[in-house]
Image 1 (cartoon, rainbow, N blue to C red):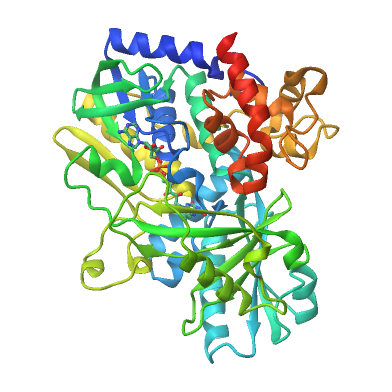
Image 2: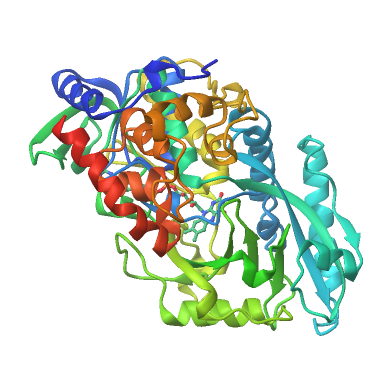
Length: 509
Ligand SMILES: Cc1cc2nc3c(=O)[nH]c(=O)nc-3n(C[C@H](O)[C@H](O)[C@H](O)COP(=O)(O)OP(=O)(O)OC[C@H]3O[C@@H](n4cnc5c(N)ncnc54)[C@H](O)[C@@H]3O)c2cc1C
């Protein structure tokens, strides 16, 4: 079991240099391309089975889709309404594994209110009850913990206590409980560090240029040098970018946009809530309170042909989300309430019906394990099911190598699990670092518990921790992926000078 501040889990610039040099010198059992949740999960699973592993990531851990999620560890309600019960089951099982064993410090129960408005079409309440009823069966069958109770019905007054601005036409609401991630990027970093503690080499800012079944040609993006890394097996887990490295990856990416809104605009909701999309019986936009005093509003779902490195929220996305969420509120939300926005590309598997004119919402959320010219490719799926995806991929690696133990990750807590030892520490540190919170607090010297900049929720000690322990190398790594100040425009700009100074000092020293 890995707890506390196991030094073998520490990632930093010196370790990265050594790991790249060692991997250039002799073959590893497994080379993983991609440092999102899927690649991180594969590296962890393989290292836990006793294989030698190196992971290369062209930019930073969680610099792709894995940081642009809605941050739900969810039980798959949406799949139920589309009849994909096996996907929903896998989600429900993996949500439990995260919540109880693997990352209880980063995943917590989240009440979700589904208000029923008198203006909703006839049948909507029956459909909602049916979907939630199936979710309850999966919940019970997957032995969900007591913190995820069965669906209940509350009256309109109780619904407004949880979500004060829901529409006055609310006749009552269903309440179910799902899983919420503190931060998707933080989950990726925890997975990668746990892999590192078991000996995996995590090499960020190292781009795969060419991939074969026996190795990868890479460019060190910090120096410009190229290296040939040899391996007995190669797994590509490059998400929507996998098709740029390997032929015939059947993906149809779909853009999902979110808005970050001041919690005051929703009168500080205590639960997430859904608003049904007009003309549908089971599609919603959601508003979800976040622990940092914001509310996340999502989500669009539009198939795209262009794969950009950093997808953008368009004016049309923003207008649509504001209109849809406001259609279920007493007080509309406007652009003036929006303090941040982000979009991501879902790595959805193409389905026949997409070509026949289906929408992105019809395309499968399943994951796929492909073999291409001796390369193993793992794509699709979602954050919640990363562990299961990794298990499938490493099973295939072990078959190829003819060795490797059985999967161990189901009962393996990540660094920081199960949670903080002391409640005297700032709430933010407890929520984000779990059992490591005290070590993080000690890391920043005399001013460690002061904010990085006025009005910014991140603390100075987090900045130091990111550089010393969490493998952050650049200003963007710290700002966007470790402190997560990319969520709100003002936070990012206010904190930038302090982060630039710390990164420059470290590079100089
Ligand atoms: C809008 C949106 C909302 C979502 N919400 C949820 C949710 O609430 N819950 C949930 O469970 N799932 C959610 N998902 C799904 C989930 O986010 C993704 O399935 C998951 O993050 C994909 O992870 P990945 O590691 O496969 O891909 P990525 O995170 O994209 O990782 C791929 C990595 O490969 C790297 N890479 C690419 N090319 C190269 C190269 N040549 N060399 C080296 N590295 C390379 C990239 O930089 C990237 O870091 C959501 C997705 C979207 C888009």
